[in-house]
Length: 167
Ligand SMILES: [Zn+2]
Ligand SMILES: [Zn+2]
Image (tube, rainbow, N blue to C red; front, side, top):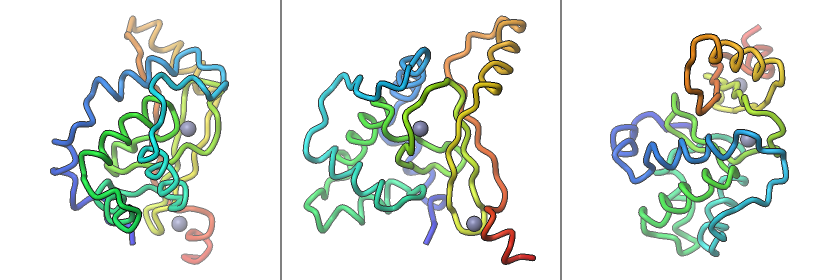
């Protein structure tokens, strides 16, 4: 089940630095969806971490990921954190700040603002991007002379399936 929140203190002290997150954001600007612009080649362990995240199909905490990867021989948490940092830098994985969890990117980015609709009931996440949103946010930043580095939005609510169940 989804339990990203209880480990948040531990994970915030992990080696995923602000630098690595901002680094991705900076590289994202002007990113044209090529998808292969990976600066550091992925090693087999990075690929296992990515495969595990893709299998999950929804955000998972680093702890759950480490559990998942144990049978595959990736046992050291620092290895998993390093891989996550690299995958985030490469734009293959996103970190959801409000959940302190990680999710595999589901598309190649063609515009700069990315939004995640997080279902509070089942934990599923839909990722989408919007040119209009990019324009709006960049327009505001320009007016406010705000040095924009990242445009990631997290929407919270109920997915269609859960909303239907709730009536
Ligand atoms: Zn993405
Ligand atoms: Zn749901």
